[in-house]
Length: 356
Image 1 (cartoon, rainbow, N blue to C red):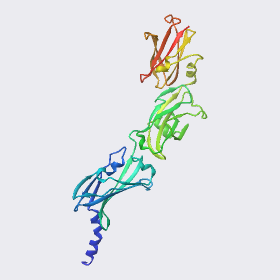
Image 2 (spheres, rainbow, N blue to C red; image 1 turned 180 degrees about the vertical axis):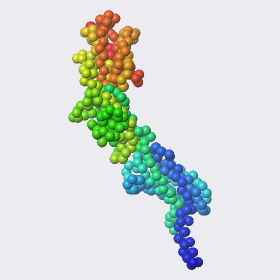
Image 3 (spheres, rainbow, N blue to C red; image 1 turned 120 degrees about the vertical axis):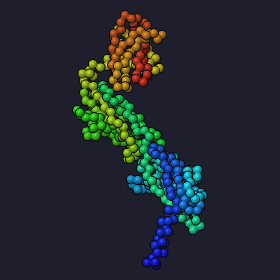
Image 4 (cartoon, rainbow, N blue to C red; image 1 turned 180 degrees about the horizontal axis):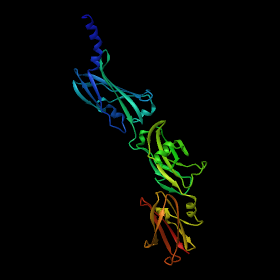
């Protein structure tokens, strides 16, 4: 029995050597991770002080493929606790096995980072301790839907979809979007419609944050409610998803009521509305394109010097809105007037006209 003790003790030597330094990785709790932040470590040395270096190897958590390796310079690690950062270990030698990791930030994804502390010995690198941690990189802000607005009413069957990209953009090496549009059945929420119903339209490889419903597809049904949602991907990997919104296609009779007349004024944003149109009839038709959901608004008639002449309340919905007014005795011929409207973001749309 006594003869076996030296052999057993010899087998324990590498275990004790690896336990000489405890490695505690101090990474940010979430969001972006810079490469410099990978070197925020707390090292606890249980033996005498020595010269050490730190090796870092990162692999993709899903595929297991190596994506990045790095080696620090040598530095002195005394006995006890030492807080390490990039200043302590630089210059760092990086080997970018995956090209997308050559930037300042880790791209979107899930990784396993393994650290090993080596003692610089005349006989070669001697491992003292190691630690592996999981790193999950997700966007700080997911993509956000923009238009059509949630629960809005659209006058036509070929809407334009737009959304805001996820942020920060530096985290994405190959940003792509997936757009889904589905009918909402009675009793369903928008999320249920996207999850359970067959899409009426789907595009899985969009590079821009907008998409026109194609004219080659069947027109969306008047009187039908639809749900839509956008998913952002980094290449083929899931990144983030918007909430699901709904919109409603106005029925045919509603579209007929809103039929655009042959002659009308177009309310334009800001200085775009500075031109003057001549009106030869006492019925004024005005066209206004709204990016807001259905709401009550006010059209104001002003004299050329800005004096308020008349206010008219109207209901405006997303898309084209046609308003018609009969110009009464308060409007004089050969006089310039201004008609204006403000959207819900306080942007001013206007047009100038002269009654002939």
